[in-house]
Image 1 (cartoon, rainbow, N blue to C red):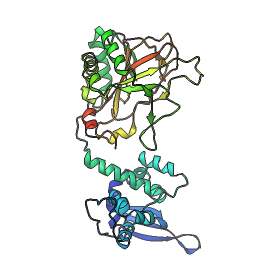
Image 2: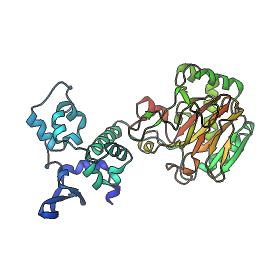
Image 3: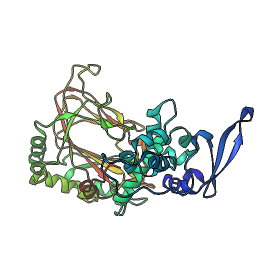
Image 4: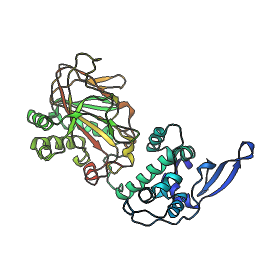
Length: 393
């Protein structure tokens, strides 16, 4: 079906499609029906694309300061090259792309960007290519470049049906960690003695003096941004001093052993700080409102989606600061140094798809300071993808 037809296939077909006109009110040509590889897409006539078989521009791209004759650039732009080869065209023929390239004509350009990033160009092409052509072109070109540079060829950690047995093994095979299965479905497990005092102190030292305001994923840009839903502070265990510390390595290896997932699949440990406030409604409260750790865009990235969270508490909190889950019935975990809670982010029968039941929040701390270390674990090797610059498309 057309809804399942990939954006890259649409771009590839743009140079070989045929069209017929459809009369609108008053006898004027209002729409054109494009026949693309046997699929019919009905677009407004103003959204017409390239003449067939445009001449390709030179490759590789030339430096920004080098320009081609305007007539040549115009011909390429009118042939759709601004959409199909944006890196070159925006460098060498920017004026022509401004004049003839695809444009976002929808009343809310930011919506076009958000929709394109969320896959609407593939699932709703008639609307998107008529109203958000520039965003579809930019996202499509970015994804094509990513797919070529960062092929998805790693091994998945989980197969369908693996999630629930993983939690059963974690609870039964590690009695020294004092485990409890808080919820069988969605699977959530508690470990009372996950980290030793030496390990706790090593992780605390790794974060000291490095905390900054925490960020969330901006769904428009797919980049980090500050947001009122998350006011904690954080840093990362991504320095040699942290990564090479023997106590930190012991924690990392324990996470891999308990989950059965190689440590390469884990992001660098996130170190968190939540300071106390006078009351839950105080402006200075630090918290993380209801959210899910799963990131949809990771499905098409080299590391795959986040499948698990292992959250280790590094301090005692006398009031507030619970990790609260929106399950039925609801449950919450109180911060206690050395305690850890582990939950699945994906469905047991489809471990690439988000399990919405593990939405959760970090409640405001009312007395004490909450320190924690968070491990987000992916379907495939995260650290190699990170080293290659492939964790963001």
